[in-house]
Length: 376
Image 1: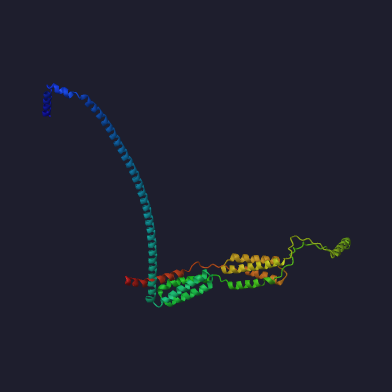
Image 2: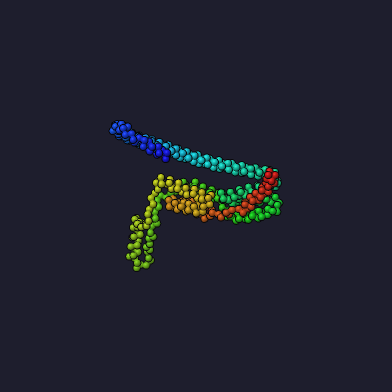
């Protein structure tokens, strides 16, 4: 840079003495200045245009970028919504698959349980065929007889038939001649003793008598009217004294007049004669009461039995002729049946039933054990 400055100074010095040349060159200076000012204004205008173009391009770029950002944001929102729907569908499919898996698991478990039960039943059946001794059939028969005795007691309330079945079961166990079964025979002896202590009620006989009485209801004579009893009237007595001739005369005249007209006072309501329709309903209601007594006999309901007979007796005394022999005999039979007790105290359970069942299951398990060990 030092060399350049030196050259410039030399050139200036060289040009200084030649003044004519300087005047010659200095003449057109004003025209050059005008050109320079016009060139400056053009540059400013070009700069402004360039700035405007730059700002416009920047605005267009910003606007275009904003539009692209908005489109991109909408696209992202749509994609997120689609992803959410896909996630919901996936969750639903997952839940449905889980539910189907649980159902399949439950179904499979049920089938496995059924197969296990079938296998157990098959093993028991095989054990019964191969492992049982011939005398074990007597024990199974005794178990069946004891179960039948229980049904007779609790379903039919027939203690007599149940006692016979228990004795037959005891006979079957006695034929086994097995000392280990003595506790079972002792329990059976206790059950038989308890059944024999139950009061015997001839239910069939009572029902047959009630049926016969029910058939005779239509032949009972109805009362024409129910009239209450008259009040007692003192009858005057004629004295034997002569001095009482006036009172005796009055008494005789009054007794003579009373033979023509008699007036008696009665307390109570007079029940009028029943119409044919009422008579029919009375007969049907009385039959219904006897039918209730029959059902109470078989059910062992002592309260219902006595209530039905008491109601039937009350209707018979109120609406039927008490002077007729048929009515009196009907009432007497109702009283006889009402004195009987049909309720009995039956045992709540048979002690020998569970013992026999446990013994059979013990023998089955003992026979199944070798079979199961051989299969494994």
